[in-house]
Length: 503
Picture 1 (cartoon, rainbow, N blue to C red):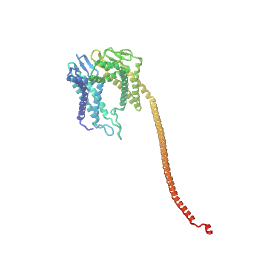
Picture 2 (picture 1 turned 60 degrees about the vertical axis):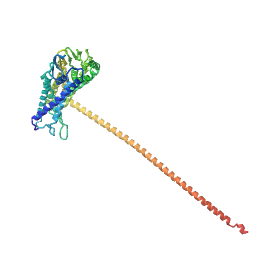
Picture 3 (picture 1 turned 180 degrees about the horizontal axis):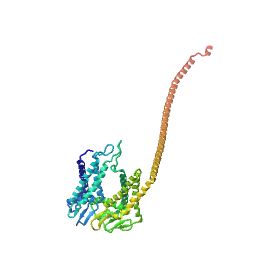
Picture 4 (picture 1 turned 60 degrees about the horizontal axis):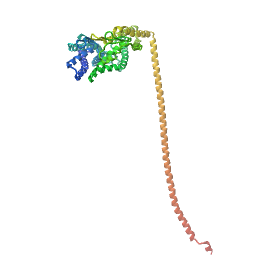
């Protein structure tokens, strides 16, 4: 691939400018609209802009230093919903940038110099995006609120590089067409590592999927407390919209707390507080409606241990997927895949728990989120034990037999379904044929009856005509007969009598 080295860097810088502008607009527009319609506020438009920049810093995982604004200390608790939106925007921008280049041959292989171009694009994107976030943190400095510049730049760099790399890898995905093979999302990763990454994805999706269902059900149960907190704030329409948006931005953070909870960990909401399977002990919380879902202080039912089924099933599913993918690998590749899965899963979950925890000042909310020291052992057991069992089971050869039986059973089910469908279609065709025969017979009977009636009508008409002709002939014959009789009578009278002749 022959390209000037400045071209990929320029594409990366342009993509960074577009992505950062979109992310800034996502935050600034609602804040400015709410400020414009709030007639009770004493803040200026500049204050609204500064608030937007501070939210951008927090959304990227940066830190704020507060003083004399009601909270003293450092605030490091990203609203993960906003972080996820920023990551999606960065990934989508790099996806479009990668697709604007022709990086693959018709055979599906990468062109010469494609990896270099991808690296330069990603470098230009990450560095430019981090610089823009750093400038935004410098512009948001006030006497009471001062973003930590280094934290803002480093967090923005990490987010942009991870999301940008995912977007560039997604841009290489190609469907199978003709002689060209299919190119997957992990085409640039060796297969032994790609299998581990897929299994980690299954584990994370299973954990967060089950936790989402559990948290949603619990919020429905606690809806009265949430509504009570919302009504206590007495917001107007735009205040309600702002609270809903804030709740949506904070919901993924609470989802991380739920994952830590179902993994037998402890979630804290300040010093000397905890929420675990043993029970809940909470202090004074901010009047934020979504925090109404936090359980009341007290002990939980023993049935709460059933939440462990969520991580257990997710871990078993991930291990089974990895066993199926590594079935044809050699021993060294299998060991590499399983170790990569175990270590990678622990690292990914630790990073997620770190993102969902932080501090809000130095007082009652000095530590908020999962406590990592309580999660190390449970998470390690939940990941390693099913992985070890499934890996050992796969070495016995039983997995091949089980999977073959499963495939055979599935084939039998499909054959049975196909046979049943064929019988149903045959019966339907017979019913349709019988219905057609009955309808044809009915039509033929109707046709024959109509023909018979027509014939009877015709024969009746012909009989009437014959009778009329006969009557006419009889009337004509009667006068002729009368005339002939009269003639015969006259002749008899005019003839001489034989007596007279004899006389």
